[in-house]
Length: 163
Image (cartoon, rainbow, N blue to C red; front, side, top):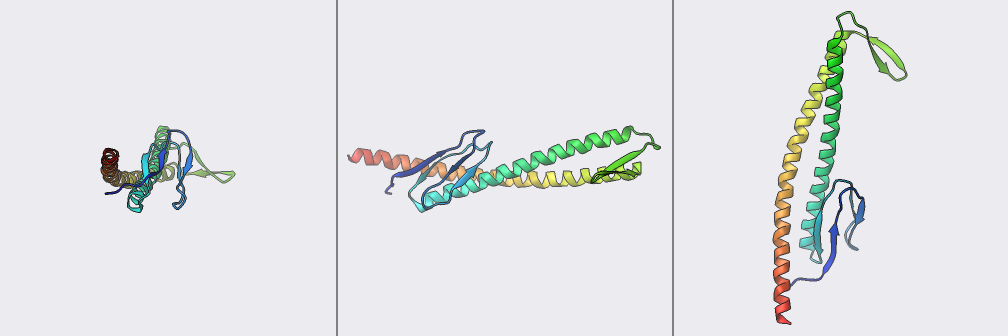
C-alpha cells in the first residue's frame, strides 16, 4: 500500500470555533465543545471516513445540545409544577399570552404543565436513544480511523527503511 503525503491535520480545541477544510473538500465548522483530532490523507477513501466521522460527531453535538435544552425545560416545568402544587384550590393563576396576563383555572394550569412535562420526557427519551446510536457510530468510525492511522504509520516506517 502506497501512502501519499498528509494534506492537513485537524485539531479542534475546546471552547473555540474553527473552520477548516481541504481545497477540494467542503469546509467543516466546529463549535464549542467539539474535540476532534484526525489526519486527512490524500486518499478519497480515507478522507471519506474522516468526513463521516466528523458528520456523526457534529450530529452528536447537536443532539447533546438539544438534550441539554430539554433537560433545562423539564427542570423549569418541574419548578412550576411544585409552585402550582403549593397553591390552595381557590388560588389564582395567570398565564402570560403576549403582553396580556389571562386568568386561568388552577386545575387547567396543572394539567397543562403535566402534559408539557410528559411531552418533554418523551423527547428526552427519543434524544437519549439518538445519542446512544450516534455514540455507537462514533465508536465504529474511531476504530476505522485508528486502523487507517496504524496502516499509515506502518507504511511510513517501511518507506523510511527503503531510503
